Amino acid sequence: ELFSALEIEPKNAEALFWMGRVALHRERHEEAVRYFSRVQKVTSHTPDWQEVARTYLQFASIYQERDQLHLRNLKPRDY
Image (cartoon, rainbow, N blue to C red; front, side):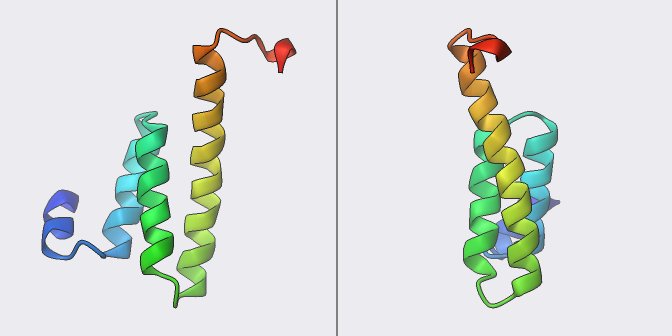
C-alpha cells in the first residue's frame, strides 16, 4: 500500500515516513535515512513533520554509524 501511495504521489510525507519506519524496523538503516531525508525535503513548510523526521533521521543515522563500526569489527571499548 505504501509503495502504491508513493507511485501515485512521490512526495507523500506520511507514506515516506512510514517507509522509513519500516526500513528502520527491518534494520535497513541506509534506506531509512533516505526516506527520512525525503520527508524533511517535502515538509519544509510543516514544522511538526520536520521535527518528527529529524528525530527519526537521527535514530537511523546512529544505527547506520553503528553498523559501519560493526563492519570494521570494532568492539564497543574501541570507540
